[in-house]
Length: 364
Image (cartoon, rainbow, N blue to C red):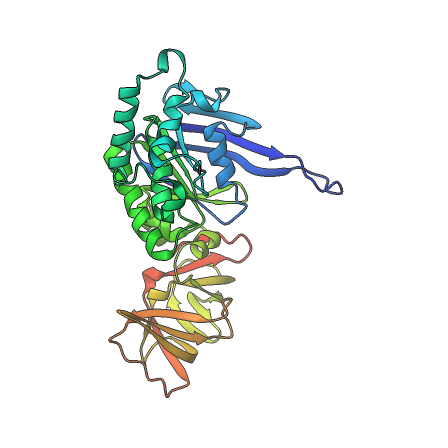
């Protein structure tokens, strides 16, 4: 089911009586979610991503704009009639019901021509439970389940109605790191098996990049960039997107362009053509820095952190906007920790230039 969002805006009254304007949570949001794809809405807390999800679900009414499921305009359609499955951050399971009863509950609420015989309801419950691999837990109560198992019950409950669109609101944030990894892989498997158009809301860029077909990066209710996860990472439109994607985050320096060269401090790190002299921000991905005695960028070495297959070279630089400069290298590479200065060679395709006024990307 294709989902089309046309110029959606959501305005909330400002609770601060001294404020002169209302709060714009989502501002003129237009995007088409392709049929059968998993789209990640990504951004920091307060950027409007959950509000966007709740407008798609019908739990919140948009101030303006339209929402279409396929060719059907559902802008004014109630939540229960939109054909959506919604998974909340806190699971929202009924503690007094068994797993089977929790999954069956949406089917028991169907009325009229949509009402199902008990045999069909049980069959759907079992199929949904098998899909999320909890069919052996149907007689347990939520309190007898792990966090990951509870999340699977919530997903099964959303899927049992055979929704046209599946909506996931930060579904992994209550899980520990290992369980998050396992559960996000399960969500991706389930989405591929069912082919349901899915919207996944998260502030965790690693989650969004690992399972999404397309990510939508948001800031203050406005779309910053849309694209395949790796494409957005490799080709950020502005400084916000570059800083938001990547772990560890991108290293950002104060720099300038002079006579066709990019300078950080007094060191010329890159040749560029056709860019006028100006002050800029220079972003360098951690994997774009390589320790090299003949390198173009000098930093003060703090320490080297070994992390299994990788190592993190931690340094500082007077021109850095980050507290530390980090380079991710292979742990087999040896760094002379007796030298207080570490020099880095740069991978040009991992270096980005940004206008200091607008923070938009400068092509070179």
